[in-house]
Length: 120
Image (cartoon, rainbow, N blue to C red; front, side, top):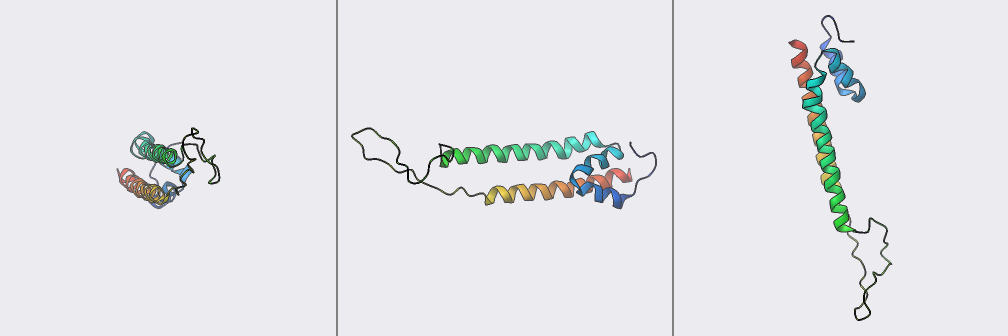
């Protein structure tokens, strides 16, 4: 239930940092819709974008979805020499950095919104 009186700012900040409870914290101050619009939807879009880009890059590196080993020779017509597939390591560090940075930024933004909206 939404709070009827004043709420404790320090407790609301603690609740904002804990993932499932943050929704309840913003519901309690009657700002859940804005929180979903400003934080949850952008977070979902970032995750979806990183997932799609990562999947696309993985298919460029290994179009067979990781089912080929380095010992398998790709079939070719009889007049060509067999070609071994190139094994390239997929670099996940940029995706991790972007994901962690956006998560920290959105958490800080959530705390800022909580403080701002509780004081109103």
